[in-house]
Image (cartoon, rainbow, N blue to C red):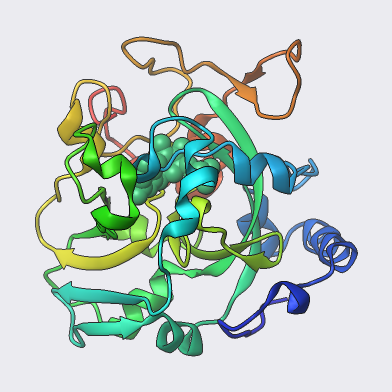
Length: 301
Ligand code: MTE
């Protein structure tokens, strides 16, 4: 299933949708294999995940560098230059450096993953991503023994990012993971959706996807990855530590101070659609719960 392709894919080269969905069904049908587990997590071995539409995934976005409205990213992110693109990998690694996006793609094996995506604002989607495991990238750079956390930064280029004129967040957008979370096989660096390169509004050319955490952990348009021995400061946590914890694992039992997290609104479900119950760890508990054994998840929210 996994295959290589390069960065110069154009629209015309992209997998025709029919073929793409055909392959998706093959993946979904591989119940019992590691890949099937990775694709959908607990609920998907028996349940088929129906992805949202291209239109929904690319027009209802959060990317505050381009404004706080859901449609601002699709309107304004087109002006972000994504070629050339470098990712600085530094801190506690054996091979620090500025890696070009092309160089990274040359080393990585891309695969398709269909994941539930749950925003802290209590809406959700199902997105067919393409990308590679973050673990492969970190191994490429060589993680040193003392590393305990991974910090991420988004591009900060005010001339192309009108939203950064406002101090909604302390720019650049920053996120972080514990090292075991970062090395987990479900943790993806996405480079595409629906078999096409990532649109700018979704975090081109590469963004993090951590399917068992609230969406704000899935930082877009990453330019820096730092291995460190300290829990790194993260944008939403710095903005309001009472509302946005460092862990932010999807948890129906721990409410946001201003709203319940017990249920969610599926984008595209229509105005009168019933809300869906939110799943612990967004449905990926079998794969990830052991990382948090013995932790008080209400305290480390
Ligand atoms: N990354 C950056 N750099 N800036 C952002 O504003 N928003 C986050 C996350 N990553 C955000 C970001 C939030 S709140 C969510 S829900 C997801 O991106 C949304 O991803 P999507 O627009 O591709 O659905």
